[in-house]
Image (tube, rainbow, N blue to C red; front, side, top):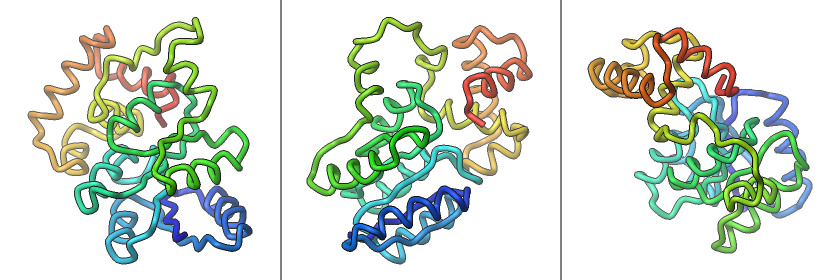
Length: 205
């Protein structure tokens, strides 16, 4: 199995690569941002891609969509620091085959890769329980946001202006501004600074 890891944290990449390579039948290569990740996928055609959500340039959700436009049969595993069930839902909505968090047993990543290679879908068990409604915790304020809105909110949290977000996403300035206005209504935020605060509180950055 040939696996592409797209993550901008060298320690994460090194740890994952060592664990996967130790299996004996897995070859690993990596990229550090969305643009390089897509280029690596197109050039090498891996069997699966492991994608972080918070990538330079574009989110893991957007990279997943771009990979799938190139290869509709792509197997993408989203690997994130965030254990909020809404992110798993958005990842699957974007076309990912699996969602695993970085703060749990690292061998869940290997399990996810084996599962998607067998044609299945894998969501970390404790997150799957939340998606199934087996936990009574409060709903995330991000539930109402689309994957695109989550991506824009993340970029706002990183300090990007509307024009910079438009350039990074390939959307028009007006579209970004309209999305921000809609997010304010959905999240009951009065200003763009409040959107930034929400992004930070929800660990989007």
